[in-house]
Image: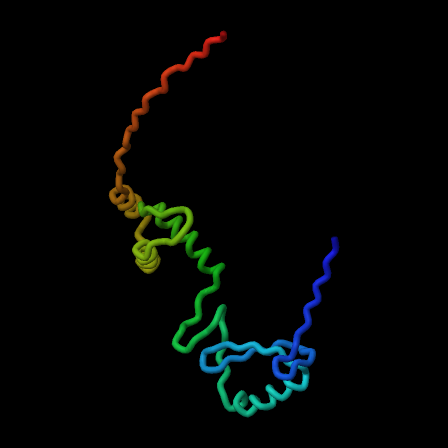
Length: 152
């Protein structure tokens, strides 16, 4: 069975066939409108004096609102998370392999990055002294009773 889907844009103002979808924002709200070439040109002409007098604000990922700071890229955050997890594991902090890293571990990592590097001999002795020793918990398990089957 074959199926053919035809999608046609309809001008939101006059109901004719639209040529494009125009996106614009006003007072922190984003709008889209499907317009034919004539109506799209009319919208751009109407906004031209305001666009010329206004200042363009750069856009990051997602929707920007006044007062928000741009976020870092997702790839940078992933690379940072890998480095933080590796550092935390090497320095005795408990972190999971996936999921959110606690703010305390992130702050300790940032503080360690800013701290001056110690000489190699001091690093080894300090690491050995600060590494916590976890007690080993022995678990005893009972072996299941042997099951015997009899043939009839």
